[in-house]
Length: 337
Image (cartoon, rainbow, N blue to C red; front, side, top):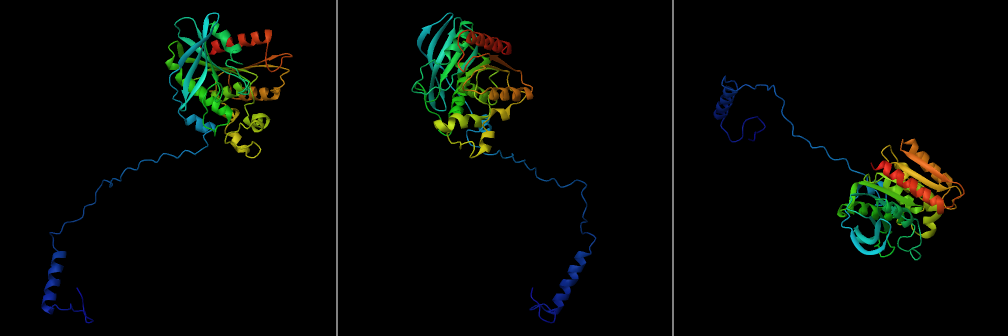
């Protein structure tokens, strides 16, 4: 309602105004008016769902990213026979990895199984010079003779194996293909997927060290003169000159990147038992690298051992190789029980 400057209601006769005010006062003072009652119960507040904490986004080749990645694998397809050994038969095989077909070999013991499994990662050999089974059969085939399935991957880009994501440094792409192979083991009726170990020589030892901090399905490792567990060492010596960095920068351009791809920084008390075997005259892998890896594992309480072969070079041969194979098999059997 509007009022004039004298306080009377504009357009309403004075007697009516008085009557209205009296009625309003009577209503406000009436005993029939309800009294407010204080509630003893607090007013419930709507539940607030906690927001999930956002995980940092890392490049695909960081160990943190690889730990989150799915490795579905698929079916191991047994191809043509390569040869018949003592107590085993060796075949060509394929399996899927990240949408690509990977190739490798299978040394399958005689009998129905189930047998423990060892995956053997070969050292670096230029793809143009590599032949199937090179630098893997000498380690895995003796075990197949003794009732352990041996699988040896041909790395991405080798012997008709597909190429994986080019952002991966080569060694990380090789580890990815391996982890899809582990996922594929359930398609092999003779394989005991609860008892899986890994061996690796040189670069293959580095592939294995990566898997030791990513994939808990692999329970034991035997490494022959592996590359450094600090990937910056390997990048300076080999990756940068060979162009196998993937999307990673050179180590001295961005050292922080290498803290995220070096297994040494991720060793814990849960890292599987690891055996090192190396010659004292190794011309490729400095003893200081191996000693640093061994000490880093021991510092975390990991069951770790190293065997040095006096005067032996990078590629063990003869009685040194036979002894190393024997020790590796004993180590694997001990830790897969």
